[in-house]
Image (cartoon, rainbow, N blue to C red):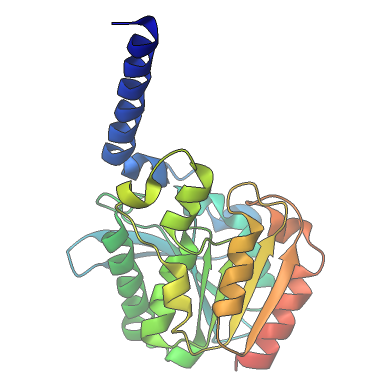
Length: 270
C-alpha cells in the first residue's frame, strides 16, 4: 500500500469516526443544562413564587412566577440551550420593568426540573407550562405573551401556533436545527445526520398572532440571516428590531430594544 493510500484511508477513517460521534452525541451538542441554581429573583429585589408542575409524561418541572402590580398580562419565557433559569435575571428584570408578570421555567433536565432534555420533551414541557398558566392560574390566552430566545424560539413558536396567545416574541433564533448545523459544519452531511427538527420557520409560518422579532448582525452563534428569513416568513402584524452585540447580550446592548418592545406590547397586548 502506498503512503498516499495509507494516509487517505486514515483520513477517511477519522472522518467516519467524527460522523459517528456527531450522530451518537447530538444531545450533548444541543443541550447544555446546568443543575445548580446559583441565584433567584430576590437577588435583584423581586418577590417571586416557586412553581412546580407536571408534564403529561410525568416529569415534574420547576420555575418562578414573578408578579407585577401593574398588569394581569404574563410573559411565558423559554430560555436557550445552556444554563438554567438562574442565569436569566437580566431578562426577568427587563420584562418586569415593562409592567409584566414573568413566568420562567426550566425544561426537563435543567435546574430543578426532572428528566432528560429532548426535542419532544421540550414541546411537552411547553404544553405543561401553558396548562399551568391557563388552568392552575386561570389566565386567558389573551393575557399570555409567549417569548423564546435562541433554542427557546422554536419552542415558543411551536406553542404559539397551537395556542394563539396574545403575542409571540422571538429573538436570536434559527430557522431550523438542520439549517443552523449545516452552516456551522459545512464539511459534514448535517442534514443526513441530524435527529432534531426545531423547525422555527415551519411553526412561525402558521402563527396568526402579532409577532415581535429581534436579531443581531453581530450574532456569533445564530447568523443574522436566520432572523431575516424568519421575519420574511412571519405573518402580519409583525415588528423587527435589529440588535447590536453578541448572541447572549444583544438585547441589553441595543438602546432601541426596550422601547421597541414596549411599543409592540402597547399596540397588540391588552
